[in-house]
Image 1 (tube, rainbow, N blue to C red):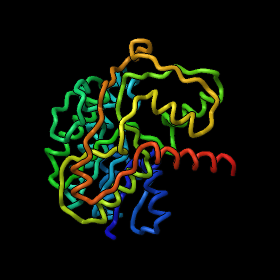
Image 2 (cartoon, rainbow, N blue to C red):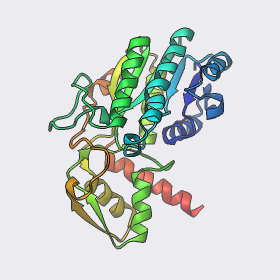
Image 3 (cartoon, rainbow, N blue to C red):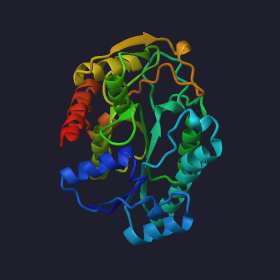
Image 4 (cartoon, helix red, strand yellow):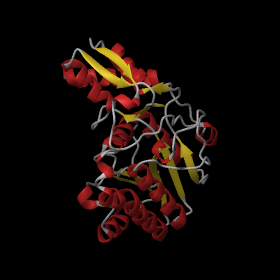
Length: 289
């Protein structure tokens, strides 16, 4: 396989891709540390492209602290827009394809239907704005790109909703969980498999795609499933968004249509609850080692 370089290799999705390629014996995928692959440093990027000569760069680096981004706009812009722009420029100069990970938060989320790739993007928070700006920069600079929007990402790695709920559920008798924000959880290992399928397919079907697990859930549904599957004895109470105000607004409904990516790359996407069972099983097995 042609060389592939992961940017943001130490993050949640970077770790999932690493686990996937190691498990499946895939060669020529490289995971340089941030010091060697900082997307904000042109000299560093030039060196990494010269060293690995990648056919594909996968951008997993992102500023994802949604509420903090409201007060930390400059850094969010640097990482989510300027970093994406830098990578697109270097990919263009070196004949590489860029696979860039984006988010359902580019949508306003006020319409009760599954969102398609060409639906209007109207982000309602700084994080969403900076991610959309990154998408637009890539489209402007590089024809050979895949932008993959995902949602509610979780895995055994990093900080995420599943691990937070398992921790809080073990500490408390009851938890209030928002029930009127609806989307779809995405297991990082499934997304990693999908990304590698795109690379292996070698199809130049460039453009924007949606990937999340199948099905629909509120945050309350998601939390309830986490507690049920893990056997966590905690009472989950559904509440409206108005009872849990946050600095950044969230889309009320951001379920994405995956028809395009499934048909183009012949992907079978697992149902969210089935993947959650797998992930929790792995988290529990790791905890007992």
